[in-house]
Image (cartoon, rainbow, N blue to C red; front, side):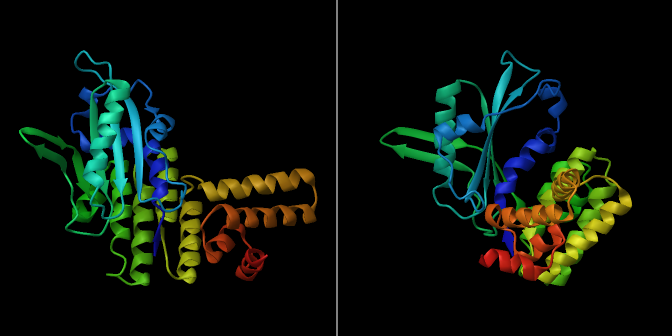
Length: 301
């Protein structure tokens, strides 16, 4: 099973208000939700250049400008690191982020490390250095997904809990069968669709569930896509990003008014998915309504 941790960058923006409410019980008193959040990705990249391999980053970082309701400071910075692998230098990197961000902005910073790895012994919480009477200790908030209670997450009405539950489910791979994983993914999708979330958040969370955890078996991938299609058509809650792109491609083809043009457009879309994503052949076939053999032929070309 593969995990696409790069999806964290998007989902954090989609449910960032819920992220704050998830970690701060008094979030409504602390933060001014009437003011827009500002995601400082480009500014953060200047401090720390990004990994060129966007599909399998070792970590995902986020810096967000948030307005507050309390104190003299009108806005603060929220620094988030999503760490998917054991890294002995992680705590030191958290400190490096802190002093570079503070040096640039001179504003209060609250930092979070969301640990999505499967190593029970890996749980860094601070960076410390001592030498000849001089000492430093930098503490930051940590949240280990592996240690969470799935039942509590499932009962939560906070959309961010669904993100954590999806990651928690991914960590069970190897302990449960593909059939059990398929059943749990479908169960989580059903639970998500009955939550009283906005359509935009349901769409974002559903896509995160669909794309974050990928099966080893292409047959299971196709099976899951088909069941999700039935669920979403039945509930009419929202349209996923894949369906949106496919519908857009079909509309373009209809405007051209040619059946051959439609087929050409579909094949171009298949090629686009092959070259621009790491989806397997079964997933691309399911998304574009072509057979797997066609996808395999185009991939070889």
